[in-house]
Length: 217
Image (cartoon, rainbow, N blue to C red; front, top):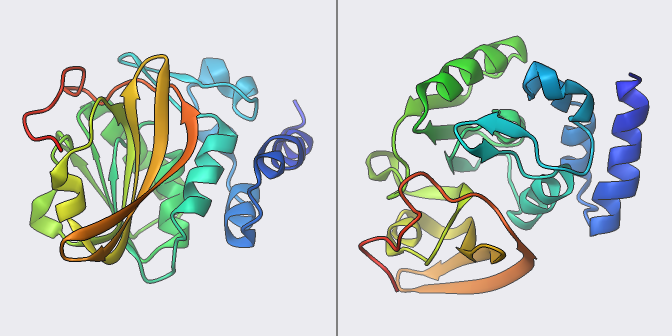
């Protein structure tokens, strides 16, 4: 398979058509072989407009939704990032290339272990991987400039917002299948966050988030 041609088509026909024009994001996607992060049996589908199964009932987002998410977060070179759901480590690696520091949590030890090898292969040294439940965020290292939640939750939780720095951005998918909203929260002050719905989607729930969490708003 000609992955370079497929990558060009992915960017031009999938990502740009979803109004992703941030050159930093496009350059990062162009420069990182997504196929390196997918299970071997799905390698040839890595650049297609489809979710890829990862095991444990988890799956990737599509390439265009990953890119749209990164653009919406307005990532900056000095950002500290919390990623909840390491998964394939593809988004983790993009975050590592675009930001100063990343903490990435996943409840599955095999995901964390595989991610460690992938990060090493791609010379990413600014990511800390933790095998941990991220349903309540990760308070010990808060506050964060960016929080990325790569699985869905049925209702919004205060914990994520509380772990944002001022001007911090949070991406999270909220709702129940088949209709969920990819949402961006931006912390404007200690007590105020703005909310922008980016698009409708359907994404597997974070482990433990299948039922409404204990703390909701």
